Amino acid sequence: MDFINQIFNLVKNLSIQNAIDIGIGLAIIVIFKILSSSFAYIIVKMFKFKVKDKKKIKENGFYKPLKIFFVILGIYIGFIALKLPENIFRIVTKIFRICTILLTAKGFANLFDASSESFAKFRAKLHFNGNDTTINFFSKVIKSLIYIIAGFILISELGYDLGGLATGLGISSVVIALAAQDIAKSFLAGISIISDRPFEIGDYILVDAFAGTVEDITFRTTRIRDAENQVIILPNSMLTTANIINATKREKRRYYLILTLEIDTPMEKISNYIENIKLALNTNQNVEKESIKVFFNTISANGIDISVDFYTNLTELIDFMKFKEEINYTLLEMANQANINLAYPSQSIYLKKE
Image 1 (cartoon, helix red, strand yellow):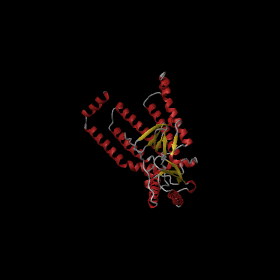
Image 2: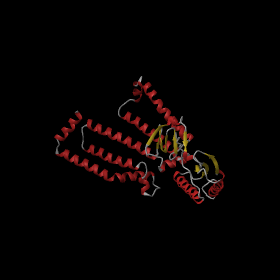
Image 3: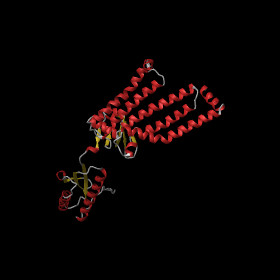
Image 4: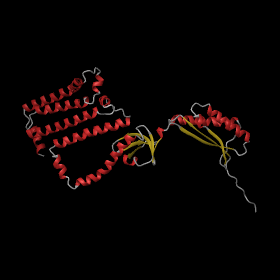
C-alpha cells in the first residue's frame, strides 16, 4: 500500500524536471525497443562469426531472449533516468534481475531444443545417434534441469534460504516424498521406455482398451491420439506393466476372408474357382506368394465356405485398405464370371398342420 501511495505522490507532485526525466526515460525505452533486434543480432553474430546467413543467426536459441532482454534493459535504464526513490527502484531492480534469469534459462533451453542446430552439434560431439524419440526425451531432460536450476536461483534471488526452507519442511517433506513416488515411478518408466524402445513417436500402438498414434513421450506420461482425434494421456508407469501391441512395427499385414458359396454350387466350379483365386494372387506383386492359402474350408449352415488367407507387404493402413478393396473386387468379379453365387444367412421354417 505504501508503494502505491508513493507512486501516487510522485505523480501528484510532478515537476518540470520530473517531466523531463520521464521524457528521457521514454526516449531510452523507445530507442532500445527499436535497436533490440540489432543488439541481439550483433551479440549472436559475435559467437557465430562464421555464419553468413542472417536467417540462421535469427534462428539461434539466444536471439529472441536477447531481443526481449534489450527491451527490458531499455525499460530498466528508463526507470534509472526517472530517479525514483530507493525503495521503489530496489523493486524495479529485483524485477529486472528475475527477468534476466528467466531469459537466460530460456536461451539455454532453446539451445538444447531437439530440433536446434546447436543440440545437433552437441550430440555429434558426444557421438550420440539415437532416434527421434530418444533425442526428444533427453532434450526435455536437459531443458527441465536448466529450468530447475533457474528456479533455485530465483528462490535465492527472492531472499529465501534454500537450506532453511528444506529444514523447515519438517513432516511435510515425508508427505511430499510419498506424493512424489508416483512421479518417480513414471519418470523411471519413461527412461525404461526410451531405453527398451517398445514404441516411438509416430507409432500406432494398442494398450489395453486404448489405441492410437504416439504423439509425445514425456517424463511422466505418453500422449497418443486415437481414431476419434481424441488425445489420451497414459502414465508411463502403466505402460511398463501393460501389454502393448505396436502395429507400426509389423513387417506385413494379413488378409483373411471366408467366402460362402451357395450349397448347390457344382464341385467342378468350386475347384476351378479356388485354382483361379490362387492364380490371381500369385500374379499380384503385393502378395507374399509362400503365404497363400486358399482352401475349401468347411460346409456351414449357410453354404460352402472357402477360406482365403495370405500376407501382403503393404503395412501402411491406407495402402492396405486400397489393396484389400482391389482383392475383394477381383474375387467378386471372378465369381460372377464363373456364374457362382455367394450365399447369405438363411433359415428354413416348417409349419406343422394339424
